[in-house]
Image (cartoon, rainbow, N blue to C red; front, side, top):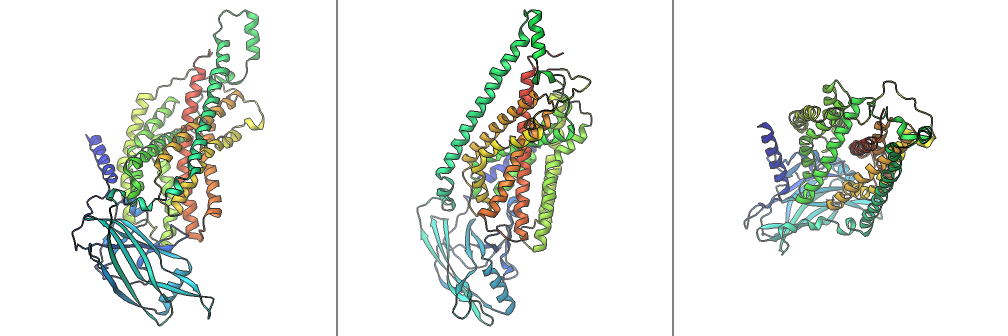
Length: 583
C-alpha cells in the first residue's frame, strides 16, 4: 500500500516538472510582476548575492517573495517583487522609480561592483533577463570613470494573452560620484509576435555552439571507438578462449598430449581456484557497486526525462528531478549491494546496507557542508537555507533509506545464493611477480583513458553550460555519449581483467572497479585545465565552489563507472570459467 502511494507521489512530482507553465495567461491591463533575483561577478557564476545587497531602489517592507521548488532554492535563487508597475499590453513612457543619493558608502559599493563586472538577473513570467550594473570608461582627468546604468527599457513580446519574450536594454549612464543623486527610471513597450508559447525558450538556446560540427564528430569518433573495442573483446572471447576451451573439451587425447597440455598450461586457467575468492573490504565494494548501479540508472532516467520534458525550461527542475529520482532508485542500490554481499559470504548485511544507503549522500553532504560554510561567511545566496537541508534529509531518511533497506532484503533473498562456476580453494595461491605494466595499479590507471576519450568533447560542452551561462539542451547527444561511455567502460575493463588474470593475479574485483573509476580522475584533471584555460574565475569563494562541485560530480562519475566496470568484468569472469574443468 505504502509503496503504491510513494510511486504515485513520485510520478505526480515528475509529471508536474515536465509540464511547461501553460497557465501563465493575462487579461488586458493585468499586473505583470518583474522579479529581481541576484547580482554577482560575471566571471564567478556561483558568487551571487541578493539584488538589494547593492544600494538600489528598495521596495517597501511588504514586497512579495517567490520561493520555487527544491532545485531552485539549491540553485541560489531568491525572487523578490520589484514593485515596478507593469500592466499587460500597456506601454509605459520613461517613468521614475526612485532617486538614489550617492553617499560615500554607496559610491564604494557601486564602484566595487562595477570593477568586478557585476551582473544582475531578473525574471518576468519565468523568463530570465540579464544585464550589467555599469561599466568603466576612459576619462581625461583620471584613469577611468565608473558609470551606472540608470534607465531600463523593457520590450515585451506577446502572443494573444501570453508573454513570449522579454528584452532588456539599459541606457543613460551616469557617473558614480559622491554627493550626486541619480534618478532610476524605466520604460515598457509591448509588441505582438506570432511565436508560440511552446517555442518561447528557443531564443535562449545557443544552437551554433551546441550543434557545432565538432559535436557531431565527437559522437562519431566515440562510436568508432565502441566498434573497435567490442571487436577486440569479441576476438578474445571467440578466438583465444575458444582454443583454451578446446583443450579442456578433448576427451580422447592420449596420455602424452594431456601431459604436454598440463605442462604448458598457464595464465587465467591456473587461478580458477582463487578467482572467485571474496574481495577485501567486501562491505565497501558491495556498497559502491550498488550505489554505482543506482547512479547509472538515475543518470539514464534523468536524461530521458530531460529529453521528454525539456527540464532546462524550469529553474532548478534538473536538480529537483535528480534528488527525487535518486531517492526512488535507492531500491536498486540496495538490491545490487545486498545480493553481491550475500553471494560472497558476507554475514554483517546491516553494515553493508547502511554503507550503501549513506556512503555517497554523506560524501556529498561533507563537501556541501564545507561549501555552505564558505557561502554563509560571504553572505552569498549560494548558502543553502536550514529548512532546505531539513527537507533533503527527510527525503533521504523516509524515502531513500527505507527503499535501500527493502532492496537489500530482497537482494539477499532473491539473488544472494553463491553460484560460482569454480570452487574456491582453502589456501590462496601465491601471485607471481610480473612486468610493471601488468600490475593492478597500472591497469587501473590505464583503464580510464579510453572512456575519458569517449566523453572528452561532451565534458567541454557540459562544463561550458554549467560555468559559462549557457543553457544545455542537447540531451539527445548526452544520451548517446552516456551509452557509448557504458559500452567503452565495460569493454576496456574486460580487456584489463583478462590481462590481469593472464598474469595469474586473481584480485580482479577492486582492479576492475578502479580501472573504470579512474575515468573520473582524468575528468578532474581536465577540470583543472578548464579552470585555468577556459574561465576567468578568481577568488577563494569561486575557486572552492568550482573544485568542490567538480569533486562531487567526479565522485559520482567514478562510482558509476566503477560499478559498470565491475559488473561487466563479473559477467566476463563467470563466462570464461563456466566451461572449464574446475578441480
